[in-house]
Image 1 (cartoon, rainbow, N blue to C red):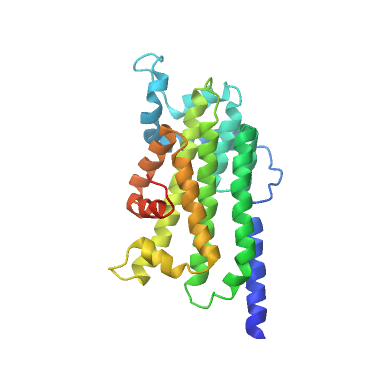
Image 2: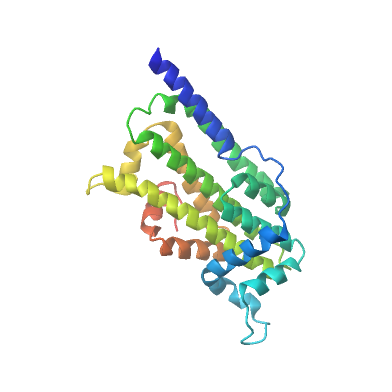
Length: 277
């Protein structure tokens, strides 16, 4: 009886995590003040400008040669564009790692088709995870299973953030210029979050797997429950779809993955689910 009760409690906790930490219900966010938004946007763009600029530089060919383009200038020019502030707010929320806010700002920026595609991804993940929560609760005896599941949840959440960032960039109006830097920086931030989570999951392999196993083979062994298998599949499918958004999206993602040295980890997972990078 104690084991059944414990399993029920764990299932409730997992369902709560699904509903809250993965951000399916979007609550009204508070408006960002200039004092919060502008310095943070400047800092994020400055941090990632070196990564995204090579993919965007050609679009700024009309600027005077040698003109300084620092992060403060980019933010100021973005604010002067239509919906520029919204793109800076999107970058801000991605940097805060709060998917509820990311989703709400994305909805403001996406067209009907983009919102529909995003909603479809969210519904699919929520349905599977809620259905399999009880199965997972009965399988948490191994000491590493609970923290591993948390990492898998984090991977799903962050890859959906990355997917959202890719959709937002791909749907940007062609008339926008400076906002593209903010949107591309959002992709870089989201890719970095995915990379660190992949590295965390990789540590399970390093400490628990054998040298003869590939990462994919080890993942297949430890993710025998449908929910964990789906979590990995959903994450890699979202990552693969994001990479196919545009050459710029793909380039920024690969560059960041290379910085974190996770390309060799991500590529076999993508291949397993019929995506190639």
